[in-house]
Length: 520
Image (cartoon, rainbow, N blue to C red; front, side):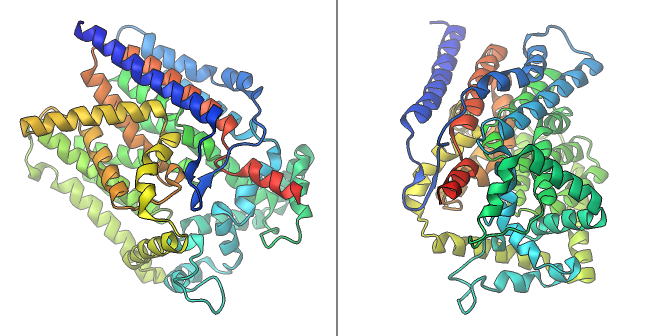
């Protein structure tokens, strides 16, 4: 059997296994998580008829893909941007479709995550108590230490926002302040929502529930649509991130794959679905800082990392992964530049980060590093209080995360990582190895073994999915003899999983919640 034939057979087996896994999840409905600790639900009545319209909404995405995978000859810069624009438009339409069409109570299900006391809604609850944003930031360390349950020790009850920095809470506060300044706009948006989506009235019938009811529809809908739009910009952000390193075709392939990450459609609307875009912007700044050895881009990286760290300390992991990627790439290429060539952007990044930390400390009394430490401690307490154990989560996490990343991408990433790791070990050298693949996968495997995430990995690690997409594209493009053929199959199985899972799975718990509420 020739090498091209073996490669085609292997790719067919990998992607056939991925497609079978998708069908198995939908038909067999296995437990998605660990029973008794945390489990994702399935949608009670999947709206399979939505598949036709979702397919039509993906046509611009298909056009961008066709240009990248079928086009011949070097594309012009204008054609590149047109393809990136088509991918982004397709991503916007598809994300909008998967956010609306599979839901049984459209308006209520869009608003629910941001008004009820769940993940996003718990930030809304906390925002209720913020009279002055500056004072809230100044007292944030104390807020992290206080138990949400009166007369109960802090380590017994951890409020969900107490494992995160203040950014998500301040997002609610900022949008509400905006609508207070423009009450006419808020009324118009609320009237439109309640007129077009009568199901929102169901939320007003649950006055006896110990949850939040006074969150304005304008704020909830604005945040819902904002997260969906930001998530849709992933192709553009990805193209920005890798174009200085890669030729047009692999850059567009990676950009298109970011629109087909199932997790951004499953957790919609949510803050988490928007985080991959910010990871890509961080990658873009870091890549330009290193490629151009630019102190300005280094400073932009440090400032972006600090700003994103106010929303999610996990972005620090993205920065560590990117740093390891650049280090492995430097070693794999056989260092052409000494460390002295890169000290300027690295120093600028550190200086920008520390300058912003000092400014917030002096102006608002916000102790950045103490908050990070307390968020990490509270995360450990939260897992312990929830009864989540190292075993069996260490075995379940790869499967759970593949629900969000995609079985196809997951198998390509693991197969590629195994091949690269064996090659590096055998040759006792990283020369010629895929840094984009080795660094993030190794880091995530170590995090899993350390038990850093015990449940909800499909949502919590969503911001790391772009790093694995870049790793998969880098590996296939440089190692495969027929990379475009493999990518066509990969796109097909990723689209299959994203669309079918968006209809069948209710990982955002929106339909499940509404059905339960109506049942009462």
